[in-house]
Length: 283
Length: 289
Image 1 (cartoon, rainbow over the protein chains, first blue to last red):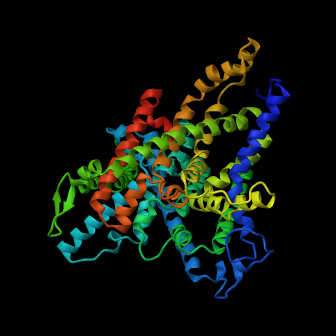
Image 2: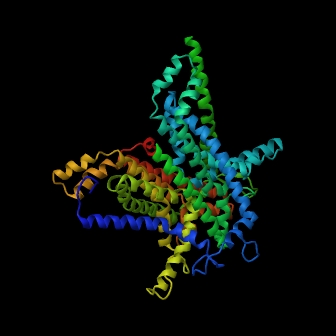
Image 3: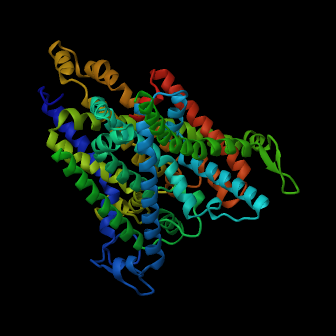
């Protein structure tokens, strides 16, 4: 049943077949789109017509490859810069929140902690619409009172960043908290008794200890932002992020360039997963 | 010295709490209060927003709305249970059965679909399941069928998509509780002659209950709030409650009705999660860890 116990061959083989089927199910969609990204055909499906790189590089009217499609490239850059700002903001606030809830005692701590965890149990759709409603009300109010039109309060690039930040910070907080729980508080106390201020102790002792978790959380926040659609779709302004752009293409005009983009995403993510694998192993 | 030290503590405390308060008040509390207020407003003939129960009355008087609501809840619970049945043996295999080296490699494979994002994987399933998709093409080529089977745009493909995007969130928390389980518990039970079924139901399942609860809550949340799988993989009849909200906000621009539906969805999901926490004796604080 477990490593140290003998079990019948039938049980062992049956179990292995199940695991094999599970991973086949898991990887099938990714393999299918990756392979079809190189299919020499104008449709996204089989039959296989031979190998081509057209869906990456071709720039003809019939076949507009990924790197010739300015709209697509623009949305990739929008997604990367959005992800960067979201990751920076949520890493900062999430780490502060982890320090606050792990190390400080104050009134209403329970309530605040509950609120900080709330994005885990609030569907992304709801975060999106409630932020849209709030921003619109605030924008209308400011316009009526001061006659100012503030871009932040309309669906826009920065509103998307705020919306994604609102839930990414929770994930950062949890990842950093998990490492902070293993932190030996006496190290911080030692720094304090050596006349470091509390801030210095956090900066020179606690933060270096947390660094791996902070870096990991930054990457996770970036990935969460990069793939988000449920919250983003309500807050998007004139420049779509990559998932929004892909979503409208899937609904209205599928060409194999979708396979090419998906393949690139799978490739990048696999690279990150492999790095993560080796970093974890060397620990 | 003492007072100076205390001062420092205060500054640090405010540096920590102020950004966190800004985040929680402006991004979490105020928007949800606004959501609740909007849900009780309608636009009158002058375009002014006035207080009304109209949006909620609309929900309860139109059969399609509350029927979709109930259907979404029922499907979400069913998918959560299915995700548990599929994912638990995998979590057990990775932590207790296979070698550490194999487990590391398989974990790598698990992370890829998780990080790639839902859109790409949903699209992958469209490519696989379509009438001219990979699976039909394969089955026709090897001669099992002559006509393509309709696998896409129905409840089946929707459930496949929902399971696919959520089940890994069951595997990971269950793995982390199983990792802390001492193998000798199972060995002892086995030495004392317990059957596999007894070991499973009386030792392994109770021990991993915290992980199962966390996983179930996350899976349920993701499924009930999902839009892509019902929208892209589901058919005309696979209505999902989030789709009503999307329609109100993005097509018909009836934001107040959308707010009411959003609030109902929030009540539904938190109600079911609260019930699950009560029944299993868990705390929300544990779900995060």
